[in-house]
Image (cartoon, rainbow, N blue to C red; front, top):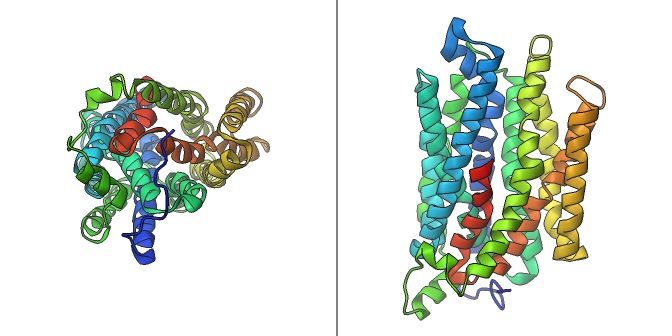
Length: 372
């Protein structure tokens, strides 16, 4: 395994590290807002755009298409923008990623058809996919090894803080077929962060040192599957795909399920479900790195996998929206299934060398999304 750095990066001051942490965390918070947007808004959007031709079957179909478009975009963006982070620098690639997901999310407020929204969700996905590998790589390389479990936990929690904020917003200000465009205006706000991050965030000194020392200035994406990196790339892809194909993807279907069951009598219920899932997820993604540190990488990954499968099965088999057991199970399932996303930011930077770190994490996080 590769270490992110042997000691505290001497070229960054404490204030610079804090700026990196705040901006990367906020970028992931807004990333989570974008990822959680359509599970909350999809039914309202589809009803509005389809009008009298809307049906429950059509609503489910378009939710699946919106989700697939976002995941496909995230997979492509994570891989290509991750590679861009190894070529041009973490800061630049992170800023570009934030700008992409913000601008295309904001354009969602103006769509007139499901097909237009579908294209925009793919484009939003490009940015959300690129944010994660570059933000995590930048934070991991700018902070000393002694702080890495804490930093990894914060990075993992960021996305779920965004999902929680969206859920709370949707629970208070209900989305309906007559009032949903405003949330896409809100989703454009992170464009301000993209501009600020370009100018105020320092570049990773670890990346700069490696780039200056290496005769080969950039990494071709195909090298990730060459003799020197193939083994760690396949390990990373496997470790990243399991959470996406398993409990996390399954848990996303609980929101349209909750909306279908409860919307007639409890219009804010889907936002409440999203909020409580995200509350558990924030704690889970923060604690994932700490648990990996305490139990070890392999043992912790095994028990997280076992717990995620068990709780997801219980949620769909033995509970249902509006039952007293549903919200507590949702919260616990959110906690356990997102332990992965504190574990991954700790382990994946250790797995890949500096010059391939963002590319490797982009592949690891996002290949599983092609299947979801």
